[in-house]
Amino acid sequence: MKKILVLTDLSENVTNLTQTAVLLAEKLHADILLFNSYQTIPVTPFYGAGPWIGEDESWWEKESVTQLNKIAMELSESIHSLLPGEIWRPDVTVKSVQGGLAENVKDIITHQDIELVIMGSSNDTGFDHILFGSATKSVMAHATRPVIIIPPGAQLTKISKVFFATDFNVSDIKAVSYLARLARLLYFELEIIHVEPFGESESSEMKDRKIFMNMLEDLRYPELQHTEVHGKEVVSRIIKLCTEKKADLLGLLHQQDSLLIRMLRQSTANDLVETQKLPLIIFPSNMR
Figure 1 (cartoon, rainbow, N blue to C red):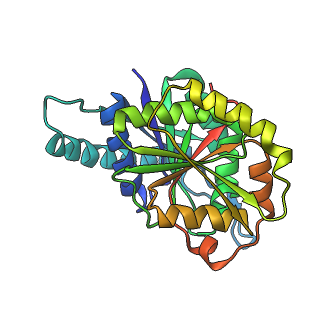
Figure 2: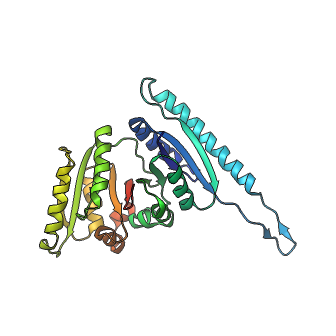
Figure 3: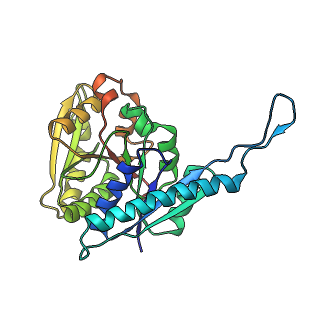
């Protein structure tokens, strides 16, 4: 049975993550796996008076599992009270493993049928930090499934409109195809957006655009919309479009050498970018 993997550090943001998981699990007929990657605290000297023995690994594992089980129980009760019996009700299971988050995520995806991953971001709200922060980078370096990132304070309890930002890279087609499949199940509007910086030569990308648009037509998703605009700064223009059109989710392909990712990395952080709280869905370039 396929599962939605929810990565949690057991913080208060877990409610926002699980609400999104339930929304998607019900439509995808998937179960939910809550996962916490815990770290133990090593033995340390205490003012030269010999070692101070902290809790051992078993204590940290027990505490992690206890907290996960509490969240799972509350989530299961919520599922049974909110979802009628005649529709899909996802089962909720938990898993806790010591070690690095990225390596553990890779192992879970390798050995279980994971549909997608949901995780939070740190308290820093800058777009560049959310996308390129250490936790997100480490997960994206190992994930082969789409990853939804929900900033603190943001909620994704409904999906009515989704944007996907492209630089006309043919690698984006796999991500758009996945979103089109989701759109058929969740009945949301899907729009492809492209921001061309002022001063860029339009002729240099005409060939890529033509190939990309032909591949979009091959998806045979007639409801697919696309918008192309100019902007002085790519990131702020993308976020402004999302705000103006009230997008619930923004999609990007994570590929180190893609033009769009390079532009995002080089972006200046203005007020609009720093304060954005839009959930993201990131597609790894090696998505299986």
